[in-house]
Length: 536
Image (cartoon, rainbow, N blue to C red; front, top):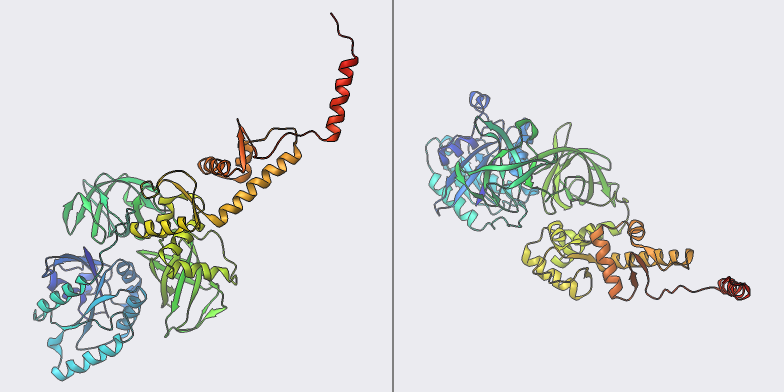
């Protein structure tokens, strides 16, 4: 199932075209209908000639509502790029095209609308050539151009077929078993309660599922599901989905929140991203600049930390660490847009590479870009290894979730990394059959091993007459979770590094040994016993 998003300049006929294609006018607000201008997101759906049902997100074209537009295009599979034949390429045409390019919306169709208002065929040819020039070098460079008139109902069948052909080459959304719904609309229905909508990603929702709304963590249960106003028991990735939630009040959820299965995602206020500054940006991007981040349906004020450079010039690309004023849900591979708050300007965008960096990076540490580049463009094994390095000792399921790799890629990458010794299983079992097994990267784990042995050595030196260090004391010193600690002690014992003696842990080669001074004191005590008179 796929979702199409409109894009284009204000008053070029996007909503009218959607209504002509679908029979549903997407402008739902009274103000929109009175002003004949889209202000917020609108929604419709249609069945294409090949029988596929698709959702349509209609976005506003006016520059004052560009931020509403950004809330709608983050989850689309293809663009319906609308340009009026009587005006041609306009400012918001170019800005919307730049946004689609930054979000890498690889598929689309250009609808040349209002062709009935063009003076003649030569004019249409000139406009079409101008459109081709504007598309050059963007994701829509090869997009077909279809001439239509919503008012005269001409070209609509050709447009539907072009959309079907476009989506036939679009990959379906992956089912990673970790569903998330970036929420772009919230409302209440009498007798049913809170309803949220969005484009479902990364997994399926079922009626009865326990969910939470992030970042607040408010928990509830799925009471009902709809896709294209049809009740469903299961919603699939890529579908426009309406979810009726029990246990979550209307004022406890808002646009930009994310609905997910309980405990599957952790909000973040720091993300590492790859960024491209638009070549026609008004100026360079400076370190510590304040920007607005648009991610999914969320909009968050953020602070830029440039990594490795003092500034980025228009047209340049580089690494940023964004520090967010409010938490968001982000996943490796998510696309985003940055805008300057005032005056409003789309600066650029890119891809989330690490949604949970463990620390505030040193800006000129050369190892940081190397690690991030491995996450951005490395092989599945590179990505899985970096995910393991980021989370430490964790279950395979947790590492796989951090990597956001498909299951088949996880299995092949895991086999490669276990085979070459870069990953270590801390528990016995078959990882292909049990994703709950603990796994850890070999390099850091050797560091943990050394630290544990040093703790035991220090204890034996301080207390040479004690048989070992209390397990709880060692666990506290190592700051390990109980499960990881137990697995570690078992593995180290198998390697002949430590030995367990009841509730004590010791180096495997440790023995209580008296020093010369101790031996002298023992000999003295024995002499005293020999010389003492025993009572009968």
